[in-house]
Image (tube, rainbow over all chains, first blue to last red; front, side, top):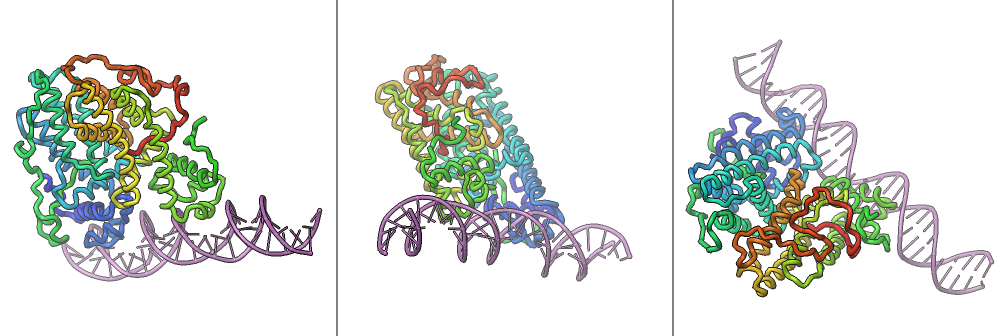
Length: 242
Length: 242
DNA sequence: CATACCTGACTAACCGGTCAGTTAGTGTAG
DNA sequence: CTACACTAACTGACCGGTTAGTCAGGTATG
């Protein structure tokens, strides 16, 4: 699940990544200082530099860590390609269930906006985008092959879906537009417009709560309290930057 | 050439806004310093503070200035609502014709990502979003009334269109996705999916663009250039932050 | 002792904003 | 026409605060 890796600060280096997540939610990327991250952990700022040479190294490691989580969160089961596609959209556009969700999405958007200045960021972000795009593309292609979808271009269609997802996140952060509305609309797009033969029937396709995933990321406690050597501490599942 | 925004530097204060535009393109928002802006003008940093008390005041004035340009750039003529809708999409998703276009879009995205931390920014950005949303909504409502569009919800549909526009811009900045592809897709969405009676025929719906853009959807040349100018109301203006 | 891990104190650089003072223009009195 | 006064616009130098990164140690463990 999504709480696989972030939840278990086995090593100090991993604890730092968890602290980075919390600090990003609290301060955002632009105002994020090494001291902020240190304050979220039980380490000093100098200790951060012991494990990661530079601030950028730390952020890059954080993105890698995030990517791995994104991979597993996208591994939605389901034989039906349309079901899988809807599940994927759900993962990417899940409504804020954690308090920090909106904040984290904001930090991710800040990172995206830095991509043109920081090729290293861009490279990582492209991986997220590619992964999501490929996941959608495969589902669409399968749906076409199964005769469920019209004979659209899977690649172009996947691009459109990913673009809509990006738009929902951006608009949510910048003007507070509800993500959920876009999700419904996008789901309607794939379950109606893309479906073959389905002319125009407004066939209600609220796979919303029904679909297998329900809540992919259980994620219980919002943030119990930092340290404690135990294992499943504040499991802060990340979201997708794609 | 219209290397910078069209605004004629009538007053020193306006010249500063032009310099701000240039500095934003060159440095982005995150790394923008008052000195950067001063360097783009023929004034000193202290002179900037003479006209604008704080850096934020300057940026806010810049957003106001931008908004006015956006208003006029959205004033696309055209009696046909669909034509007007496509024209609006074109304004929002015009391919980079200025060198600084991508850079400026990046700066705008940085600003959007700051909205949650700076209510003053958010307020301005909401104005952009509302304006674009309202423009689209009106066109959609008219198209429905004219029997051209199906009986969709104009408000929700406009939201979707604006979201797609946001997504195209975000994805363009963060991973370099081509804006043009999304524009074609979005135009196809409104001229096919939304059109009443039009079941699935790829009926080419390229009405001569009113805003000077001939073929909207097809757009064969990936790197169009040439034309333009003619009917242009001169207000090529900035891009929309919406 | 050696190694891994960590700390407090420090440095160098940067940036927003301030300030005393300069320049240029304009009006006004002699 | 000159002399002076006043003001808007502007400048270079400077200040205070902040931050990434460094460094000389300290501590615990094997």
